[in-house]
Image 1 (cartoon, rainbow over the protein chains, first blue to last red):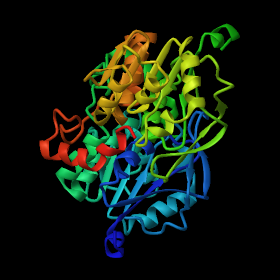
Image 2: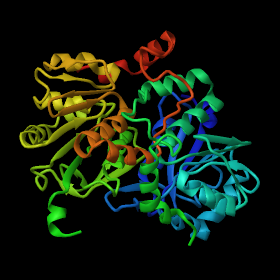
Image 3: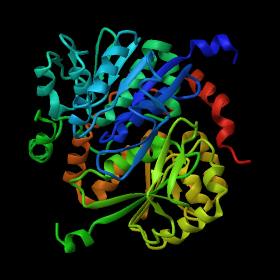
Image 4: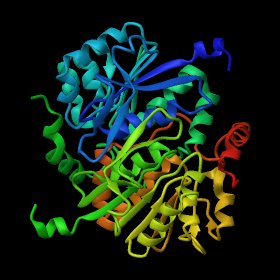
Length: 223
Length: 223
């Protein structure tokens, strides 16, 4: 590939931080780094190195600092079971607000939307997040919207954890066209067939929804 | 939790190795480590430390060696764009064959099935893998089966990359019951809504399937 073509590659920055949920980051990563796409995907963090996931069993590596990544074309903020991990980090919030000014797309997965919200990015915008956290979005002036992927201008927000795959495919379709998105989907063989139809609070049995609220609802409420 | 309860936790070992595809490992991981499940999930590798993913942009950490993990209840072998990464590592193949004798479940995602096959685990069994790699399964005496998740006895194999989420939810349902699986699905908000219906070669447009074969078919053929 010649330099001209390389220059056109879209720089994708996926934020890593201690406490994040791995699949929130890895879903979009696996879609956006498919070799047939003209993208350059990097993991970024406060400082280079190893970041711990939410329940301590896995760490992921960031090769670039925030300071080294001042103008990504696509920003991806993954979520966490402990939203203060992002919402309480002013350096990260300032970076999000700063790079958002020049991104082509600003995106989030799960409670990553609360990071965007705390950075002031979602003010007055329709957005989604993990179903347990919709009320928090409202407190930051966003318009919580029940959908798997919500687009408002250049901001794409996705629902809980696994939804980042759908969000990233939507993004590929917007940016590179339907054929590129279909090829990507085929390469990662994303032909989902969950054994139950229980993946949203509107579909799961009421007792299951109540259990989820009781066990995890307090994690994603504001302190 | 008291010691009796802890003793009952199912030990899940997810293999990491240089060249693996991250989502193959992270999909099942995110399902199987949901805190409401009585599981103990660990990443294992030849040696402790950092393992590189297939296209060099991300590394994951393994906290346990194979030798430290002689009898997991559940074995998960993720896939890779470069199957020799597993199939050519005799130490890993010997470990797979050894632990398979006492697992409750032996599972794979994507071309991870070729690792199981090379270890002799799939001889005479129905199994699936990434759609581009079905022919290789046959060479190892497995019965390639077109399905997202294939169960044959205690062996669960999943199709390409993203299918590990479906496989792991199936496993949760088998092991912990339908309600536990539904709760898990709801917590990771797995209510998939891909923007296209192109996630398998039977569904994607023929031109897209041909492009995928041309660009990647040679990666997963036998050397």
